[in-house]
Amino acid sequence: MLSDDELERYARHLVLREVGGPGQGKIRAARVLVVGAGGLGSPVALYLAAAGIGKLGLVDDDAVSLSNLQRQILFRTADIGRPKVEAGTEALKALNPGVQIESHNMRITATNALELIAGYDIVADGSDNFATRFLLNDACFFAKKVLVSAAVTEFEGQLATYKGHEPGAPCYRCLFPAPPPPGTVANCSETGVLGAAAGVMGSLQALEVLKEAAGLGTGLSGKILTYKALSTEFRIARLAKDPACALCGTAPTITGLLCQG
Ligand SMILES: [Zn+2]
Image 1 (cartoon, helix red, strand yellow):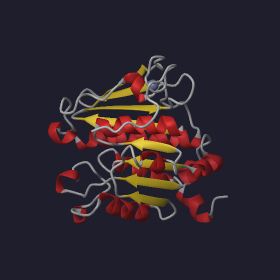
Image 2: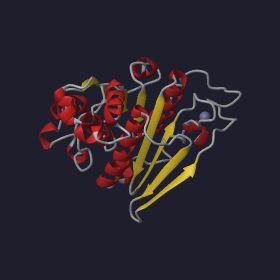
Image 3: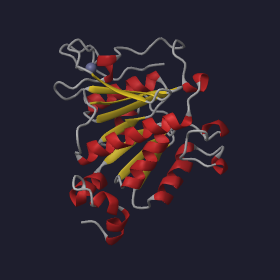
């Protein structure tokens, strides 16, 4: 049962026939881990807190810097120098005190990943490096968690939902079998990113998480969405499970988390 306060706070969700009380109840029961409190993680965490996700975890080992504020809308100028998860938790609690926020001031690694994600149902990957992306894919596969993964660079973004543990559903390795060699792909601190483009991708990512949590519509499992900000183009391509995938294929060779550089 929703309280009087919740009935008012979520009124615009509750009037949606597809959401209603049962949907809002599912959103309140959901536990979501947001990895990376950056340009993607900021809108993801803000929208999920606003939507009333029951438990929201935030993982990041960085502190807020001046150059973050152009896109990381979870933070204010006064937060510069503070740990991101500390400033972020404060902002999210101020937005919605009804949400349980768990802050993890750490880098997710092969040693702690499974323990960290065990307390959540859905993982939202907003990290900025391939090592974390592959680690989360593998960890979510072994732990049978839904992974909603977004990436953004310069003026382009991509978004997909991975459920490699389910029959017929691909994982990230079905698309990219292995990380590119270190140093061959630049991250956003080197290439730049238009702040609002990160906002578009993060908002879409939050929406896909909410759809998974509330069982709404058709998700992005088996599909990949790409966004080109300069020409304002959205495309969706089919993404099939690869029977030869080293993780989720018929004869897997990856049977545990790999330590990646
Ligand atoms: Zn796979």
